[in-house]
Image (cartoon, rainbow, N blue to C red; front, side, top):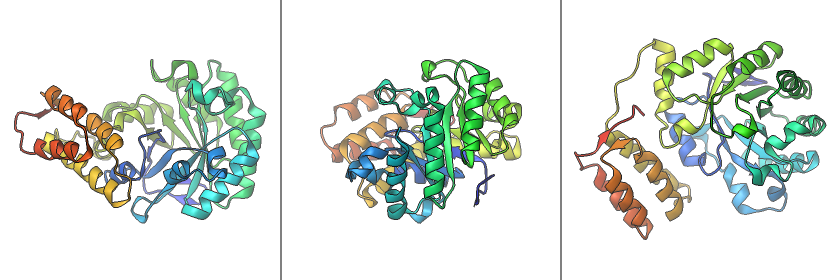
Length: 325
């Protein structure tokens, strides 16, 4: 799949997710087959205020390239100015515009899915970004409840200069519930000449194959299903290529991924008690007989205690992997 001048080796993309897609997690997804990874959404107004917590979300390294940084905002000039700061700092291969976040706290400021109500603002943002940067600009949108309106928005994004469009097949009102509307995605793909990437509800190999074939999209963007399960990228990639399911992983292999996440976080100065504790809960949720372990992790009072609990899991033969990820 090609996005502007960027040539990707495959067509599986890691979705940008707040508090999830930091550098260590992106590296795991890249290791297991993600062709392109996106950062957590970065608030453009915070970047121009030089807020370190926001800027550090773009922290990168050569092993995860290519990288896309996703911008959140509603003002074209502010977003362009923030993109220039981030581009100078991290040199990402592309920038993405968030037109899909359904969180009320985001939408009340006119950002995320709220932009779906203001096509003129979308046009201004993408036009300004494309004119300010020498790397591709993409967008990630949700559908509205009306097909004609959704197609009009998609055409607006393309005509404004976007090099690719990711489409989450749920409305903002659905948030993460319900099913993804593949018919809308299919018709957007037929309407546009730029690459269209399908997103929403892709949580296993068979679904991935069905979505790709039914919509005719150029690629798949996978989000919530890989939280705590980066190996899903390898499973889907293998299934699309070979038509066969990989064997069930052991619980120990999942623990190895979690320990690797810990070491990567330490390496890049991102290892914290709260983040690692949360990631532990995500990674072990696919196991059988893990209720006691999850309680131990939840009750742990410091980082080293959490790490010790995770290391002990390698020796616990009573824990069985229940999901294939």
